[in-house]
Length: 263
Image (cartoon, rainbow, N blue to C red; front, side, top):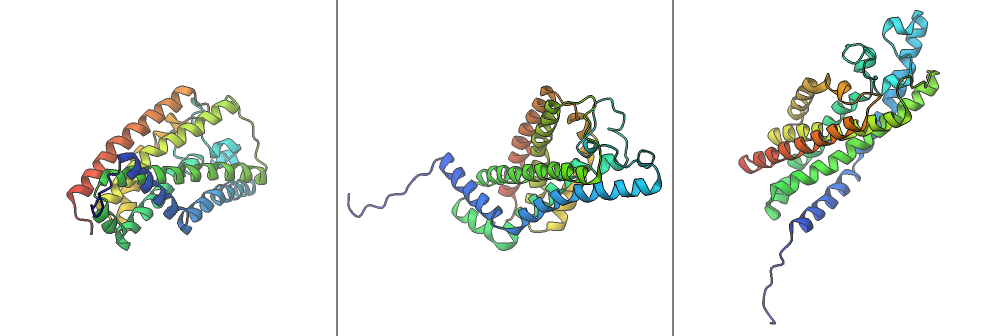
């Protein structure tokens, strides 16, 4: 009938798909994600080359706790004895990405509130759950890219430093499962970072501080959950844990947005 105003109803899938596209475009057209990817690529190169040089000049890398094998930059095998030790190889390996992820997530979310984008968005699309799901998915992809860049950087840095690539008790298949487990586990940290960012909103320093503080509580569990000789069970457990935390903390983040001011 002519002259009749029709209100188009968008399904959940349509709303979410549209928001995810916008978030992907916003993330990958900003320099932030490329800076973080570059940091994750260069950092292991610097760590492996510099610690190897320092260990060599001191006359004993193993005694100083420096890297003696490329794969130490990725993780340790179960029963290797160094997984729970707080030494250089434990603190300066690929698990640093879990803390760098907090920077990516918190800056990305805080920018929404500081620029007024979130307030305008929720004025048009009031569903807070859509926002949380979209941010979780997009930030997870960005953080997974950071993890892969660190892995590539570790291989490059190990080759430059002349470190051995001997896998020992691990295998190529277990390294792949180790990386899958680490990537799946990112969902836990992304959910924690997103919750911290939604609580403090535009106060970036507070969100990063809170996210890193909570992440430190889980840091010592990462080597046991993602060993270098990981099995399918490790990857499955990290996937399940990531899904549970993503849903649970995601619902909590949506509740926070619904119950608090957007400014």
